[in-house]
Length: 558
Image 1 (spheres, rainbow, N blue to C red):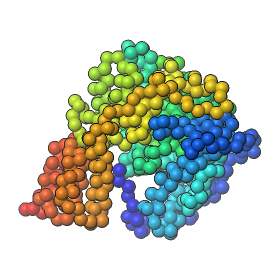
Image 2 (image 1 turned 30 degrees about the vertical axis):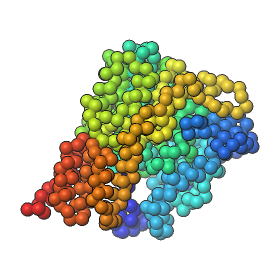
Image 3 (image 1 turned 45 degrees about the vertical axis):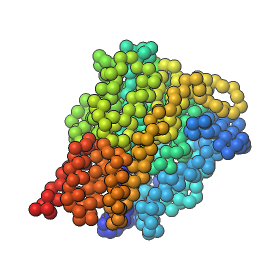
Image 4 (image 1 turned 135 degrees about the horizontal axis):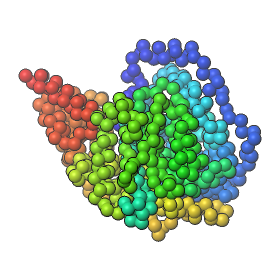
């Protein structure tokens, strides 16, 4: 993931932005605060059982034995926000720091931070019109427990609301590459018991610290349906979840243009579908009501319909894709419905990104298993090889398991059961939960929510030398990238060691080649770039950049 520094933008652009933003009315959005006077705001006192277990009335928050957190909250929209904030306050502040401290690094200038605040206010000036009042009330309750350290970005309530569009903005920015998710469903004669089975990886990466505090949330709202979702502190939207009727939702980013104004964050739309739909028809109807500002596939499974479809949304188009004459559905990061058959952005994603490759890999793995069960689904999500089991290097975005996932998840909607991965990535144990049991327990505070007898054990790969080498490679590759940008010196022995840590990955040769190129060692750079070309390169733009470097070097060496 490459993030551009704000300081690299031309100064005239900053001046233009300032002129535009100061001339446009954003007052309404800045001062819009939901009216919560009609809600009962009563919540119970927080009781600390130990340093990672807390209760408040029937609400609870506890760390399980695998390092993930389990949250149970109930009440009206405002109470859910307050209870969530109360119980997760410490982690909420840590999470904000993990995500927002990067802004201080990227935008150290106080003046440019002021400009950034103006940019955010302008960009998000219409968001408040596209988020249901109940969710704004929940966000307001949650924001009461936010950190005050980032008011230079936005006040607490606005900032928490803005962060719900981070997923959308991240994947839309074409040079941020924050997401590359893979999902699949099987049912009928394709599964062991004939029931619907769904698996997905959420490859949303915003730093190691961001991924540490994963929350499996169980929500019992006074309006709508009970549901679970996998989330993080400060997030009320849904990226992966299932409700009490066995309706599941996950999201896969599509190819988007850079959006110029925020509307409904996709995680909020996902939340609305999960909370208020019981079948595919109702899910589609809810999706049609909302205006989004990026392109996204909403992968919806339904116990009632006993199948899955993808709802494909974008700012100017809408489609629904369902398979005919087959009992499996695959979704990566391109659209498949007729509505997008001629969409230029979508065609470009298919031709140039790693989405089609992962799609074909899923086809290959699903085809190799005659009758899928939960363990098979987990094994597919953990698969690190390329097509035909080719070694393509650890961390390659062409792999289903890119070794950066926030989580992997498997649903059995008809049984109301779900399995959620533990850290690291999707290599840790997949912890099992039964929604019927969670929501029927009568205990005053719901603790120990999982079903240990159904938990799937950790992947043995995380205990191997190959995994240790990969983790070392992640550190070394970052050091190498910094050295390229800072004109620092790295010994040849260190470069060789970095290559040996992940020798099948094209990126390591590319980085070494760039290092040599910047130092003027053109023959060594050429060798590294040409070696990179023999590996499985992630995207067409990556391939083109390699070719440009090689042509430049050959001209220099003549």
